[in-house]
Image 1 (cartoon, rainbow, N blue to C red):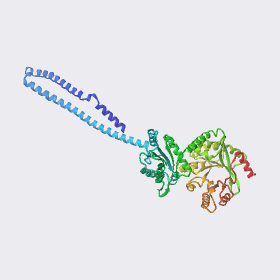
Image 2 (cartoon, rainbow, N blue to C red):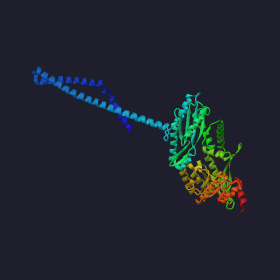
Image 3 (cartoon, helix red, strand yellow):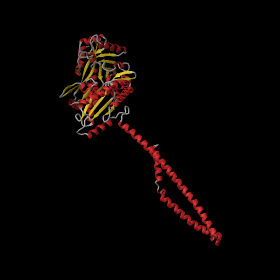
Image 4 (cartoon, one colour):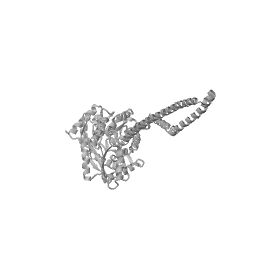
Length: 547
């Protein structure tokens, strides 16, 4: 529609700018027309008079009549010419006015579109806060103007356990919470300071021209105190806390990217320390970042250098104390650093996209060992831990399907273990993926049960077969305590839902007797057997059950 109007305007403007319509050209045409008509009239009228009247045609009366007729004729011609010209002129003025009106409307529409595009480019659509693009531009502009005398407090914070709120109440109520938090902070934070939402539940507060550093943290604490409160979401109360990381310009970074990275690192430390706190970036964190970078570089070569190996921890049937399967555990033996615990490199590999290669290596090794055990007549169950990143990736289902077919595996003998954190971010997609795995014949176990925000709510939703009670929960159990009764309830509820229960981390005879007493089905832990290399698994099974 706009293009059509522009074409019409262009045509009208072209017509109005035509040289043939200029005042000089129009006047010249009228004068020429008058001269031509005059000459034609004189010649033609004289001939006509001579033919009709002869010598009498020279009389004064005839000449007067001829002159009057000429005046009337030319006046009529001029009337027609001038009327036509005025009509054209009037039409041109009218069209010009319309063209200017349409041009003005188009200009207003263009301004409105520019404003909308600006908001889309630089502001968050949910909260109306500046987005990360505007934040980055503002911070970099400030740094450019204050290379030596500026000071910025850069605060990166997010909502603790926000994914749990999304899961319990739904994403719409999660968005409502974010809007409420933004509304409270908007009232307090004024220019030149800037609050920006950079994605999800993540915010950045940039405080410019700080007068005194000793006043900076109390100011941040004041803002946190305003939003650290109980929120009503769908008639339910949620007490919300925040974890914050702080980086300062120029001490902790001289550009936006560095400040963001370092404040994010500080916030991660705040999360690791128990959340609901503010942590300031320091040089030790730089060392940690460098170590993680170095570890990641070494991790990329671990497979090709054959530094990984698999260990297996037996799973014991508590009815007869006989092993019925093993859990697969990856081990990394670095040639210089020695043994590197999985907790140090698994999460790092997930964040940096290297978990896919590690997971595929584990699957290949399990298939090779499965063939060896099967040839020995041992058909015990093998459990494999699945990363959240791997589980939610699109190629995962086709990959495991091909893996089973290619290696002629019995998928009913393979348990895939997932953690609550692997499924909580997108519970509906997780259910869909797990149902597909069940169709392929795999057994599904929910690992680390008892540590999550609302584990019990998942038992009826998720297509799982086994729950594994986390070792941290087992270690805290003492007779006649609240945790003790919770454990009993968890076991009874799982059995009521026809789920198998495995207790992890059994280290003492008291713990073993306790889980037996309350009819836990299987257990694993150092009390029964430590993880062992592949070569020891068959020997162990023969020692326990020589048949």
